[in-house]
Image 1 (cartoon, rainbow, N blue to C red):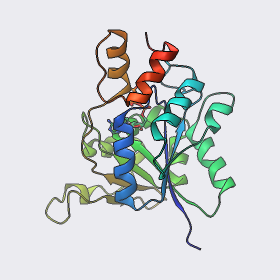
Image 2: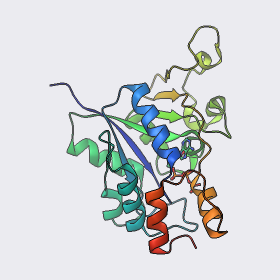
Image 3: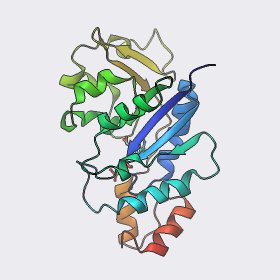
Length: 221
Ligand code: ATP
């Protein structure tokens, strides 16, 4: 039997929005993954401002992906005590499902902040990393990260020799496998949605059922 191919999509999901759903779906198709597993952070070490309780963020993801068979949700980071380190999550998934081919999925903004993460060098060598385009940054900025020092970025700048809409695979000699995924730009962000809700304006890209949940539970007021 073929080994399942699953994308790990972590984040605060504070709250989950249409941007998450669109880029996760586009990445699944572009990389030929079977499923995308959304894993909300229980205690995100870096994003603590105006953070809704983890149980609510988990429930909003459940609501948002309901009825989409290629999407699933995993509550391990919410159940685990202490800071939610992605490397711990990846290691526990690999131990649990050794036959699955895992790919970590992160937005470009998150990858550019990798230096502040827990053991980024180990994380980069633990599994392939798909980097989703996000407005506000350029893929070319990745080459300035110290963690990416061993990667040959020249194919990224060779615009004649490749299809700019296809995923671009880049590797280092010592085990890093980056996949740059040029998804259609999505402007949604959790920060903008929380701001709109607090100011009583209509939020951009909030799924109606999630908006309903937020209103019923008095979140982000
Ligand atoms: P916030 O503004 O609260 O930081 P966010 O949506 O940027 O919200 P997360 O919920 O932590 O942050 O995002 C989860 C993952 O999805 C991250 O890897 C992030 O980079 C990515 N992501 C979020 N929104 C987009 C988007 N519009 N386009 C591409 N990637 C995105």
